[in-house]
Amino acid sequence: MTQPLPRRRMLTASAGALALVWMPVPRAEAVPAGADCPAPPDFPAGVEHYRQSYRNWAGELRADDVWTAVVRTAQDVVTLANWAHRHGFALRPQGFRHGWAPLTLTAGTDCASRVVLVDTRRLNAMELGGPGAEPGSATVRVQAGAGLEALLGFLEAAGYGLTATPAPGDLSVGGALAVDAHGTAVPAEGEVRPPGTTYGSLSNLILRLTAVVWDPGAGAYVTRSFERTDPDCAALLTNLGRAFLTEVTLLAGPLARLRCVSRVDIPAAELFAAPGAGGRTLESFIAASGRVEAIWFPFTARPWLKVWSVSPQRPPTSRPVTGPYNYPFSDNVPAPVADLAGRILAGQYELAPALGQAQYAATAAGLLATASADLWGAAKNLQLYVRPTTLHVHANGYAVRVPRSGVQAVVHAFANFYTALLLAHAARGRFPVNGAVEIRVTGVDDPAEVAVPGAQAPALSALRPDSARPAGQVAVWFDVLTLPGTADANRFYREVERYLLTAHPGTRVEWSKGWAYTDQAAWSDPDVLDRAVPSSFGPGWPIAVAALDRLDPARVFSNPFLDRLLRS
Image 1 (cartoon, rainbow, N blue to C red):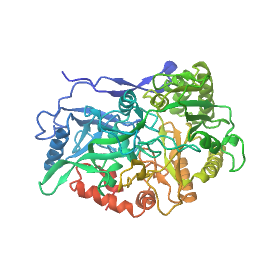
Image 2 (image 1 turned 60 degrees about the vertical axis):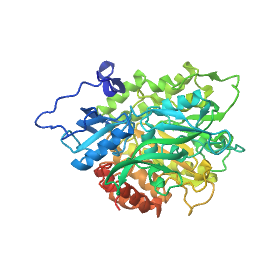
Image 3 (image 1 turned 90 degrees about the vertical axis):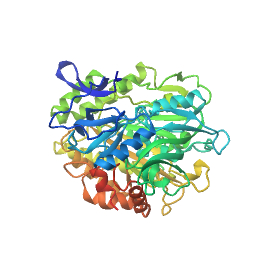
Image 4 (image 1 turned 180 degrees about the vertical axis):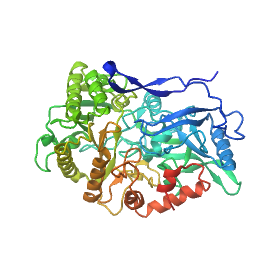
């Protein structure tokens, strides 16, 4: 009998308010194809396939009755790729659908489109390999459909972990690598990088990978392994879904114990003060711990600041935790927040200040009520804190690369610009933003951190080092969140994007989030798509695009948006 696969649906809250809470529900049995939706011709025997609806994280990109195949082995992917090539179909790998950008499907895709989604979540085996090049490090071989939470749990059980990871656990390894997924970490003052770790993206941990690529000699798609030293590997390390990875070998370092202290008492004016102001500034926390995140709800005076620090022994004031997701007030939307969100979705956008205040109040009260303002435990349990039940919002995303000494200046300038823009819109009766600003800081993808001579840097990673910029670079990540469909949001995001691209030339987009805004839509501005994005990667952009085209000349692993973006 077919096993149920997760799908998501929207639930209604009390009093008619619409709460953005998504829950897994069993997949319905395959729907028989009608005359208006013929089954894919000559579909490979033994590969399960069915029709289902597709929704991305924020529910903004929807496709109904898409043909979906389930792969369990790398050979299944090869079989599907050669079938798709013969029949003029495209294959789009999908894991947990935790993304915003149209890298998997584009709007208008349906069961009549010559597209098959490929559910990779059964392709999830993992095993420890030998040690890495640095003493104390380890390697782990993992298939691309494995979940990030499962991988981190597997490593923890063996005494290993990663320096930084994305906050959600419901990401597939392949999906995370496709978009250079990252956490927040730079070395604290005096900190020595642990062996087998990186302060950059997960893509920088890859030692080797296996992908399904075109073999001109065989005249067919085959699996091929790429070492980190292979020039073509540079394009595959962060591939935007333009390639199909089946497994990777990653580095891991010794398991760290972390302490995470949350603060809600520091005014934004102090945290984001001008450089040299002194006091409790963001750069002071970075110097002390290296790992910070600021979550600043709109129309509030004090952000939620998280500060992680390496702490082998539990501090007396810290509460020990043995599992991830330790902020239940954030994971499960409180009723006051859900009510306000529902009213905003119904068109009462002027409630944005009230929603910001409610989110701050729920955070401050929740940290106290759940004793979660000072936590300690294995790294994974403090690094993962976003569940599928978290409020689903639209998010833009950008990485501004600066010398480490320039972090406070960049954050200060952005905070001033954002505040002025928010208030200017409000003065005109517009409230386009009702979610938080999130600020993180990471290192860059330094290939030297894998300790393999000749290792390639991920060519399309937002964290790829730039030889034209100063040494000691870090990246400051800015995300601005709002409920999907909020009036004037795209106009606001366009103004933010223009500011960042003008004030900080070379700013790179966060692939999984929103970018290339017009006043009407994301991923649509031709100047950003054709000029700003490619130029931010310099001469490495056309080289990477050419490699992806050569490895998949039939564009089996593509979609119309990627065809538009990754033009040779």
